[in-house]
Image (cartoon, rainbow, N blue to C red; front, top):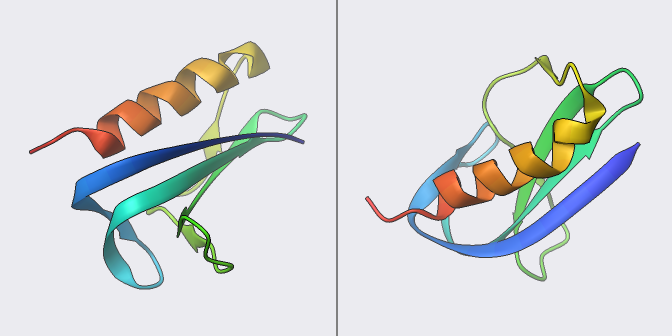
Length: 81
């Protein structure tokens, strides 16, 4: 499973399944399995507990798209309202 992580600042917040909206300096981790299944997790920078983003069953049809999708997510989550 390949993981990609990025740190960014979410001034308007990011919705999580477990605790609702979190904001501030966050770290996004995307993981892509051999089958193309993609999992999305987020945490406060330096925190131990990771949260999941809403939605499920994300699948990439080409694993080479993982890096591009990861960067797109960071840009969308970081954007200012």
